[in-house]
Length: 106
Image (cartoon, rainbow, N blue to C red; front, side):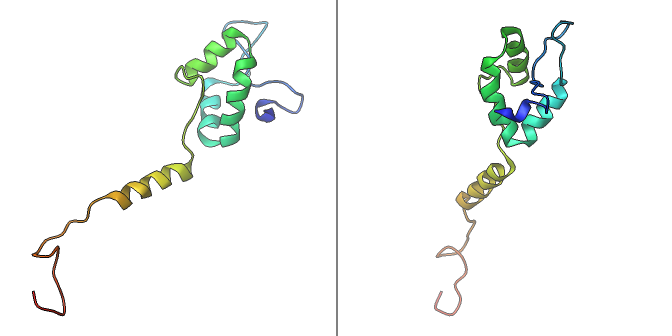
């Protein structure tokens, strides 16, 4: 859960736009970049957001597309899905018995 905390223990997800008493620590672009690239950031995001102030949760959930859980597939999952789809693809064949036959009577 400590991924979004700096060395001083400050929660970098905190902040409400336009509130000088609770300024935004990280921009929306920075947060989204971390969520896209770092699995630990996504897991920690899901744990921290429900414990924050309602206004902070609104901002962060809007970033996550309104989802209560934020999930973006990691590189390995995307590649595994692509490969699985390729393995299920049909094989194009032609000929009397599904292609050309070599070494025997056709």
